[in-house]
Length: 323
Ligand code: XMP
Image (cartoon, rainbow, N blue to C red; front, side, top):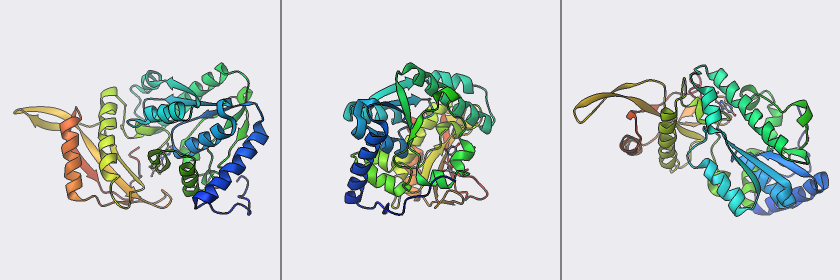
């Protein structure tokens, strides 16, 4: 159990409150780090993005953002990180294309927890290598948020492994550590981050790796990435938007028929759930016409897929992710 949220910190619900918080944090960050350099692993998720945007405002080029593309990100995500942070915010961004490295390590690995360990462990190694290439880093920024502190026993801690070696133990800068997720979003909006980043649904650290079940292959992963983009585009128009909605491509094949010829292809599974805390979850109703549109778009455009299914399971007994 870490520090408790200060009683003087009022809930951040308005742009004015967010602006005041941003001004306070800019001053606090400047006081903490002075003219020293700070390193940050920037995934493109809400927490690390807001953390990065705050630090860019406070110390500009002295923040070194490292974005590791491990090949398991969703369609368009690495490009968006580069566009928003390097091109629009003029951040000092190191983009690491580690796709082959991760996928080679994962080749043939079927056990979900082993896959998680490989992804988590390799991530730390890539990040460590980049940290060693940088000169004069004295601080490590992290997008820790308040629930992470309260639930040090929670899902993230349970699933995500690893840490930097002893000689790279920098002092931490954690500007959003007392905020709840909804407050982080209000701050992100006030910082000018795009809605697609600020209102992004939760996405597991191992990314598409746990939705491309069993041994990940590049062709099935690509099919998943394309199908997932279609599912997100369609289901994201529901009101209210579900907590999580995504595609899964399991490691099974079934018979399809095209031009009178039978062939084997993968199914795409659609999953949309609502929850308050991810401990229990309910399947969200997707209108049949939307399901049909998703089916048609996937079948017409995603190579290797010949069937579309809808997972209507609740948690318990089904977990949100397939692995
Ligand atoms: P499950 O599948 O256990 O997921 O019902 C509960 C929530 O946790 C997310 N999840 C993960 N998040 N690393 C993460 O950071 C992981 O390895 C991981 N596995 C599951 C999942 O997306 C859901 O929000």
